[in-house]
Length: 270
Ligand SMILES: Nc1ncnc2c1ncn2[C@@H]1O[C@H](COP(=O)(O)OP(=O)(O)OP(=O)(O)O)[C@@H](O)[C@H]1O
Ligand SMILES: [Mg+2]
Image 1 (tube, protein in one colour):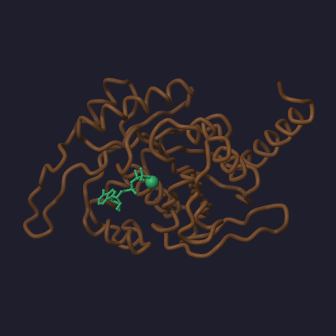
Image 2 (tube, helix red, strand yellow):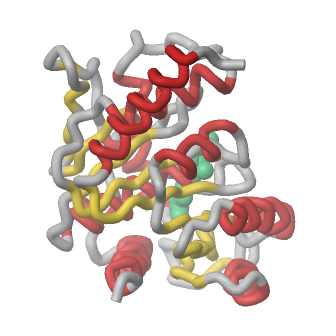
Image 3 (tube, helix red, strand yellow):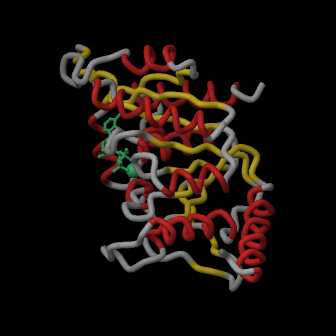
């Protein structure tokens, strides 16, 4: 049983979140069944891509225990508050909030689900996002508390499930797609990442993890397919230095795929 006071507090928190996110036109969640398939890479590069196309964009790093967005966007140091609000950091015009900028470097977050959810609610309700065209939430892998909290409170209008082409990843992404369907997210789409590798020396396409499984799965599960992103060794090196391939090398194969996906996202609302 919750007390009247607790009920009122919850209602207040809910109102604060809906007021704050009412200034954000489109809210996208990026998730996956498996870890390490490229959710953060996709979230960061799509956000820079959206910003390059003129949209006011933010990234909410919803991976509370393994926050990687600051590492990939080169953001160091802590966030500041103005008393009531948390001021997001900014990287090349994209606003960013992450647990990594709220704690001393290397400190482990060993929190159970309810505390992690509470932090996400703060990211939604207390961060000074201002008017945004897009807020992209980068989730931890799987279908845990963070995903549920985001789906309930951020009210996303698009879910992007990232998978790699191998069977093991596709099995898990089917679960993530089912979750998005259960949550009744209006647009559900799939991206196949690490889809082939062009040899930088000879230009030959190496079918490292397979190609095409994502497109087939999207068709089978009746969701949209946003595109395939190749493996790009330079993108990985740049990410390790806090830089993004779409900003540094606009004509790289991976950047072209990302911009094609950005176009498709823009056209999703027509
Ligand atoms: N298309 C790609 N080409 C080259 N490297 C990639 C590509 N996609 C992701 N990577 C690299 O693979 C690693 C894992 O990617 P990333 O951190 O984005 O995955 P994730 O799904 O967010 O992982 P986690 O589940 O741990 O949050 C990173 O080193 C990233 O730079
Ligand atoms: Mg990640």
